[in-house]
Image (tube, helix red, strand yellow):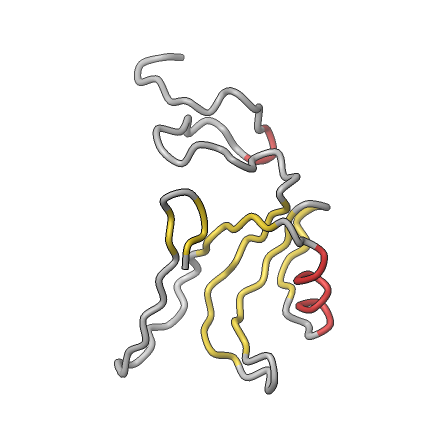
Length: 112
C-alpha cells in the first residue's frame, strides 16, 4: 500500500507465531482526521489524545467483530500538524515535536 511519495507499508501474513509487541510505532498523516478518530473512540481504541492534531491507537481490529488482529501503535496526525511534509532523511535530531520549528529540519554535521 502506497503511503507517501516513494513510501510503502507492506503487510505480510505468516504462519509463524507472532512476537510480543515491543512498543514500536508508526506515524501516519491523514486528511480525514476526525472520521477515523470518531470510529476508534466509539470502540474504546484511542490510547492517547496527544493534542488537537494528533492521537494514538494500538490495536488493529476486525471492524465487524472487534477482534484484535494485530498490535502496533499508530501515531495519527492531521495534515494540519506542524510536522506534516517534514523531510524523512538527513533530519536534525535536535528537532522535537514540542519545540518544532519549521525550516530547521536539515542536519548539518558539526554545526552547533
